[in-house]
Image (cartoon, rainbow, N blue to C red; front, side, top):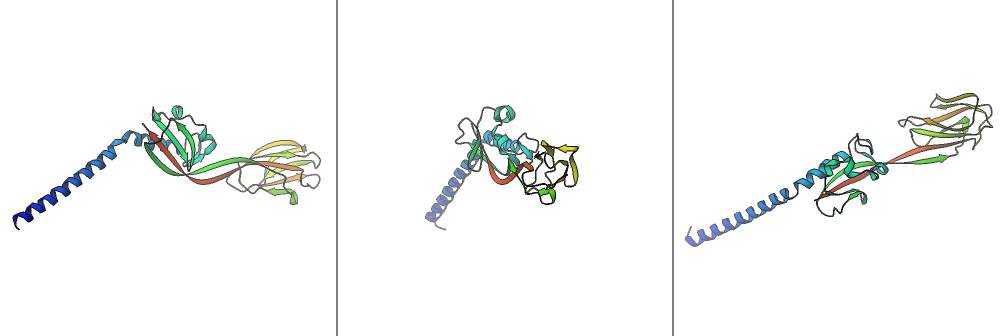
Length: 213
């Protein structure tokens, strides 16, 4: 190899090495620039989806209304003095300060929402089946048909030989479909029993935890 070619080769190698070192230095700097924010964001995300959290029904299943009432500083000391923003998809549910930059950690979660539903069901064969599973029902029973017994899936949950009338709350299993049946002196008609129950709906969402210095 002649001298000019050798000089050119050395220049190419030197330039390539310099660029590589610059990129490597930039990568390490980017990785080390926000270690505190990433640690806090990761720890907070883990606590937000933990099974024993006050706003979860089980691991990774959030109750959105209870999450929105959470006090970040009091319930999650890991936050410290950092600015924090917690989002479910495109909705901000928790905020402390103005976390516009920093580090964001994301998790796929389920969001459980509950609402009370009131129905005046038809009572074919003195029974009705609820369309959704629930952990409790409220029954408003009229006095006229003289209902003496209420069963939930063949289990007696209310009984009065003198007749049931008024409002009653019954705990049920949220793991099985609920069929309510009634024993009465007279055939039940629509309106003799009004049923209210807590209906839950679960949807998938992305939990985003942003922590800024």
